[in-house]
Image 1 (tube, one colour):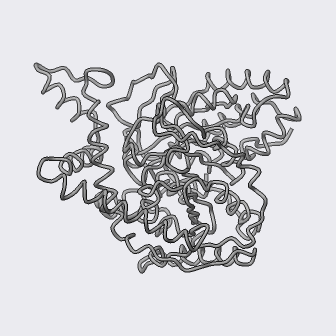
Image 2 (cartoon, rainbow, N blue to C red):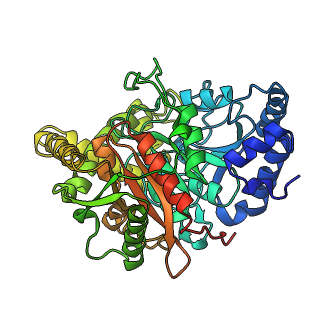
Image 3 (cartoon, rainbow, N blue to C red):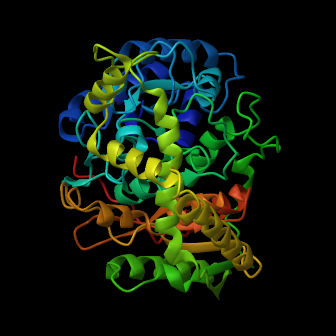
Amino acid sequence: MPSELNKLTIAEASTLLRKGEITALQLARDCLDRIQAIEPKLNAFITVCEKEALEQAHAADRRLKSNEAPALCGIPLGIKDIYATRGVRTTCASRILGNFVPPFDATVVERLRAAGAVFVGKTNLDEFAMGSSTENSAFGATLNPHDTERVAGGSSGGSAAAVAANECLGSLGTDTGGSIREPASFCGVVGMKPTYSRVSRYGVIAYASSLDQVGPFAKSVRDAAIILRTLAGKDPRDSTCSARAVPDYERALTGDVKGLRIGVPKEYFVEGMQPEVEKSVRAAIKIYESLGAKAVDVSMPHTGYAIAAYYLVATAEASANLARYDGIRYGLRIDAEDHIDLYNLTRAEGFGAEVKRRIMLGTFALSAGYYDAYYLKSQKVRTLIRRDFERAFEKCDLIVTPVAPTTAFKLGEKMNDPLTMYLSDIFTISVNLAGLPGMSIPCGYDEKNLPIGMQLIGPPFSEETIFRAGDAFERAGSFKPRPTAV
């Protein structure tokens, strides 16, 4: 039997499981042992599901004997603690949901269960997915496995760190403004944000409903394609979910990018970026050219307005979505003499500072006299940003950019400066505003041995092209992954 099973990719583990060379129980046990060993250093999980994982692994082993098991059967995964999981608490990293146990599964959780996946635990995040560093969690920050004095990125930092540190073979995150791609970049793993509507959001606790999207973290592009194939597809319980047929993403991984037109937007290579980030991404573009792709210059002139538009649209939607946490129906309840005091005391105690900040900003943007000046104008800017992408894609098939202007920053470095923190997402937010697919793939390291991510952006429903390009870069072999510090 191979040693250190937790270091396998999903594709490798799936092959060994089918050959009978390893069992799902051995694989789950290896990941759970790894979690137990390093969690005090990392804090990637809020809830570890050891009992459930071992039961699922036993069931997977029985299913694997039938030779009809899906690709994810027996594969240990982490689930961001923003997904409803039947019988397992779902906290959103917030005190207000600290003891909430849903009576149902999110659609994507249902699909993973049906595929025989093994859930090793619920991963840490910024409270209600509001943040870029996973420092806003009520359960403490997740640390970066490459340097535990630095952040893992956010909001899906726990999911990215868990995969990077080999605590699981893949994981689920959500991406509202970069919350899959930025932590994937900071932790040195692959993170895929699909087209808005490609994956059901039913059972995903909402932050900003017109921006949120479900997606996977993985150790390779192929693994991400395997997970997304299971997650994607029509769901009658989500009216925004596309009925478009789901392709077999693995079949797109041909390694061939000859003739692919790669757009390089000048607005994404700006003054003030960490030099190693720009150098690594431009070197990756050269590799694509050596594989037969063609780099073309494109421009997206409204990119500079994206941060302002995003933080009006997202906070306005958050203000409406978080109104349901009132201390009456579920979650934390602070008793008081009347219902107004009950609301106030419950929310004051239950929500953290960043969530309160965003609720107040969103409520202000939607208030009488300000709606047209702020929220409505931000929606118009959103349209302009989408049209920028549409014009760019007339000249190219994919757009390549950095994921973030820097590598992972130090814990606490930006906590007292919300605007600087918000700027961490400057290269990812536009993709959400336009509803496009985007993927972060590791492409280099800085002088401190911190990972650098390259972002591949495509037109709506071009996940196959993105996976093909990402896989071709991995096959080129110029990027060599390095072991983590933990």
